[in-house]
Length: 287
Image (cartoon, rainbow, N blue to C red; front, side, top):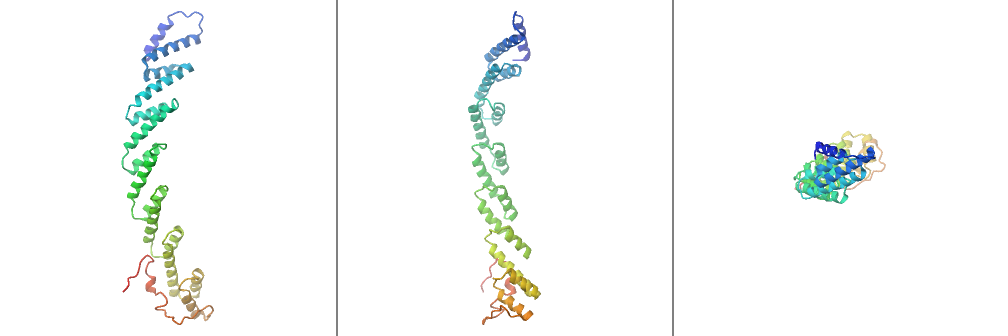
């Protein structure tokens, strides 16, 4: 109903004499007549027009309920996500049961239309955080992201940071430890950083062994009491302890703590500098 039609009805109504009625009483009668006319047409549009003018709380409530009922009946047979969303935006607090049914339909159709991409899954999760399909969408997201994982520590770290609830979390963390070690530059600082950053890595013991080898090589290359003592302080239980103590004794003349070994042989009893140049993850081939 157009505004002009409503005004015409109003003029007709006011042409009748209402002796003794206050302005409020006249206004109330006008609203009631408007409501009866709108009820006969019974469309969302006419109820919209009525509600834009009405002031009577009881009539407003009745019109609001009637308008929502009509909208629900129409939208419930639709298959358009945008229509579902318009209903949900407009009738959030009118009928909880109707609202929940349309929300379910929206989530269902949105899920069925979901593209098989990471971005689509993220968009669905952000837009429909209470959807019953959320666990399925998250599973898709975790799987798609896992399938696109690159064999680099950066890629693995990004996956772990973004998807801590993923069922692939532990597997990716294993990849992270492996790739991070493979990408390490050959210096003590890098290996020390690895041990600090990944204390639970299964490669930690190998990295620590390599650190011992580097420290050993630096000590014997420098051949100073300072580095020998530092090595003994940092790695008191290493396999190089006896040799370092012997070299320190030769340098200082102090034989305290030296244990002599009848099978002493720098070439066979101790690892040579050639062994030291191999990373812990590499295995020497048997001749």
